[in-house]
Image (cartoon, rainbow, N blue to C red; front, side, top):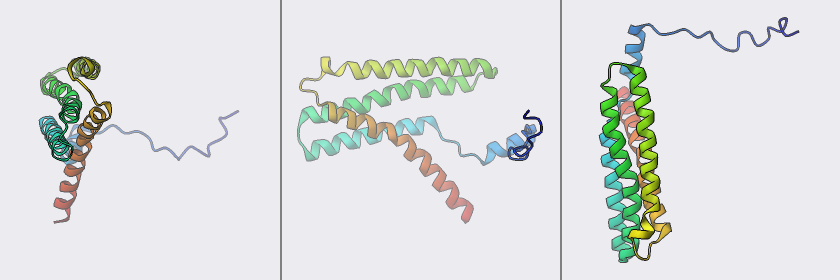
Amino acid sequence: MWDDDDADKDLEPQFKPLTPEQAAVWRAGQPQVDVWKVVAWQAGAGVMLAAAVAVFSGQVRLVSSVAWGAFAVVLPSAVFARAWVRQTRLAQAGAALVGLFAWELVKILLTVMLLVAPPLLISQLSWLALLAGFVVTMKVSWVVMALGWWRRRTRERI
């Protein structure tokens, strides 16, 4: 019934695998982001946000809540960054991929534990401040990637 219908035949191009040389050229044109740079930017953003809250509010409970939210992003990111560097050195791609999935699970579990612990550790916890520290610190990775893209674009224009 559908064999006659060739209206959609040319809509999708045929998949062609790249040769090793073409793949190398493609990889060379892609921006490489150092995972430790992302972790450093996240830590810096967390420290700056906590300092800004300290200056503008002066409330220790808000500063500690923001700092814990940032810590709940930075520590798991650092653990995963270390695992990323180690896994990318493996010769077998399949083993490296399985390892990265396992370390991503560790990162998620560590993040959940760090988000469950604050009521036990911080008196007068401010969940809103914790969430602000968490979200701002987590979104810094997008800023790092955008800066890399912007730098690459400006270099191409020169």
